[in-house]
Length: 380
Image 1 (cartoon, rainbow, N blue to C red):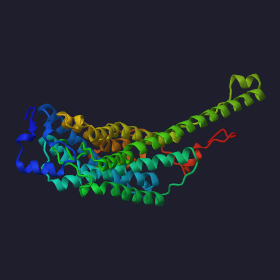
Image 2: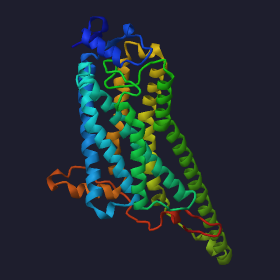
Image 3: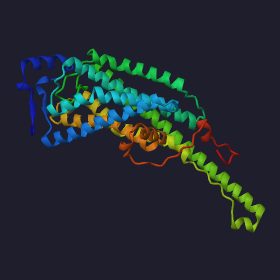
Image 4: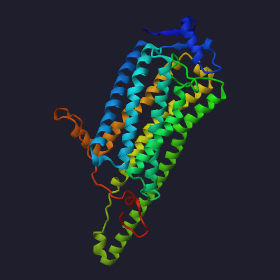
């Protein structure tokens, strides 16, 4: 179906009535027009979306199974990552297949009620994923900057329950039609559309603040503080090492100058966990920032929402948003040695084709102590 288009004027009377019932207040339904995807884009999206869907589902299933089956993996951070994996897995199961079908057919064939329910699931799982990243970032900040290791597995489970309840409370109104979302064809799934209703605007702004902007600012602040602390501690360590070298040289004279005494401290294991969280934050920003901006512009700009290319733009940004769920398991495999080992153990021997990556295996009993550097300490 090359350059297919959907003409609102030629649609059936029943579908027109349904559209007018579900369209947001203030929308001019006569201006609706949709330009579908060409054949090359349809083929590309079918292949790319299928790969993203399978990787997001299977990869996150492995994370959940690994944490559930292995008691040694049930640390506070791993429990939080399992909750994030569960949210990504459910997103792949309850949203991606229907968005894939709608992307190809350019119309929603699953009914208005399920469209609203799908929108609720979409925002529920997205907000839960953001909440987990926010909790982990704040925990790293407390450990590295404040030197407080407060997150236990029990507290992590309590925070997970609270985050799921808050996310459900914010997303549930969508399932009952408050605010009313329109059924596609304007996008691959139920999205926020243009309206002049102030209550609708307030809800969209609230969702965007909770979903992206506030977590982004908080996480950015924590990472800047963490990087500053790590840099300051590294400078203190090197200064202490230089002082010891000078002291040894003064005692040994010229012989000591020929062979100065050096202290070699490996700092990589201290920042590896933080670097993993920083990578997750970077992927979160790249994948979800365009979608957050697109949702706001679509709600407040009639010209953007009524453009014929809106469906194609929606498809690109929606699947960029979905891509994060597929990338997270790959990041775990790349950065976390215990996760790699567990993945290899779970696979049959004839399926062990994944490359082996080097990693550090040192375990810290109190994570906060490795980032502390007093004025008179040469090691941490």
